[in-house]
Image (tube, one colour):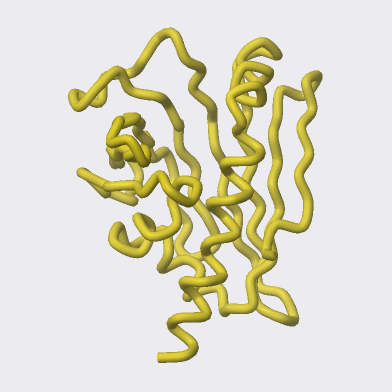
Length: 166
């Protein structure tokens, strides 16, 4: 399993997930740079993602929804702030009201920092989310953010393994 550590800090207002992948830095970057690959791993199993818009560039927007096994759709967006290919990017991650992808003011948004660095065995990814306040962080923790994110990130291994076998 790629996820090696999960830390949440209500004082620092952060949730940090660390994962190690047995793949080169550029290959891990491609998972996020290509919307069709990202769809294969974003969201926990059983809740596939569909990226309607995918602009991984400073000022870009990525709109997507996840579909539940019952067919319910959950909408969200990323407002991309910075991109430093292939070592990372930053963005605001928010829940959307509906297919308009307008921000849902009742659910917390976060500032995300995705950092990728080469290791002896592949790539280490550090995903850090920072929330406006402890209540917002606690809300996403209660919603299952750790479990859902861990399941989603762990799916990247299968995608990378399928590539290696091809």
